Length: 355
Image (cartoon, rainbow, N blue to C red; front, side, top):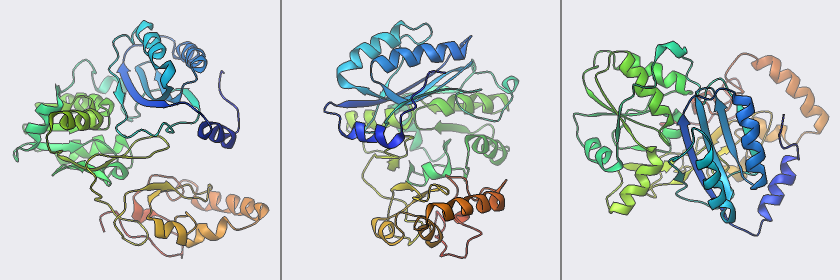
C-alpha cells in the first residue's frame, strides 16, 4: 500500500524547517464510494504530489479529512478536489488558529466507517437527518431555555470548551455518546433538540439515529463549532461557545473566546492544554499546566516520570509486564476520563475532570 515510511522525528524536523506557509482545513462528506482502497490510493498519489499532510479516513460511506496544505498549492488542491466524482463543491472549514504545524505527514486509511458509531448500517438512514441550522439560527435558538442543546463529542473535548448550558455526555467514544443521549432523553422525545460537534460529521449520524428512535424535533449546527466561531465573529455576536475547541491534530485545540474553563488534572490549577504522557508506553491524553509539566517531566504521574528515566532494556521489560497487567482494561488507553488516570498506580492521583 502507498504510504510514508520515513521516521516520525525526521518528518517533524522537516516540517519545522519548511520556509513556506501551510493552511489547516477540514471537510467530510457522506457519499457512496464503491472501491475505497482504489479511491484511497488515487488520493494518496495526487495529494503527495502537492506535498499535502493530514489524517484522512475513507470508507464505503464517504470521506472524513483534516489536512495541512502548502499555501502555494491550495488553489490546485481545491481544483483537484472539485474534479473528483462525489467530492465536487465540498464545504471547506479552515482552522481558526493556524500555526501551519498541524500535521507532519500524509496518512490515508480505509476504515469500515468514517465515524465509528458501533451501529449496524440498517439501524439508521443517513438520507434522513436533522434540520441543518446556520450559525445564526443555532445561536438564537441556543439561548432559549426550553431548547435542549447536546454536545455530541467526547468528554475530553467538552471539558475544555462547550456551549453554555449544553448537555455534555461523559463519554469516551461517539458510540457511547449516542447511546447515552438515547437513554437519558427517552422520556423527552418531543422536546426541541439541538446537536453540535466539531465540524458536523458526528451530528449527521446522531440526528439520523435519534430520528430513527422516535425523536421528533432534531436540529444540528451546520459546519459545527468551527463554522459557528467564524460566523459569530463575522457578525459581531458574543460567542455562546466558551473555552477552547478540541481538534484532532498536533495542536489539540484552538481557543474560541479566550476563556479557560478546565483544570490541570494533576494540581487543579486553571489550564486547558491537552498533552500526551511523555511515557510512550502510556501516552495517555490529559490536561497539564506548565508547572506540572516541569514537575512530572511532561508525564501523567510520578510512576511514568520514573519509567522514562529507566534504561531502554528495563523499559522493555516493564512494557511486557504492564501489557499483561492492563490487557483488556481501559487503564493504558488514551483519552480517558481523568479519574481513571493510573487508577491502579500507587503514585499521586490527579483530580477528576469536573473537580
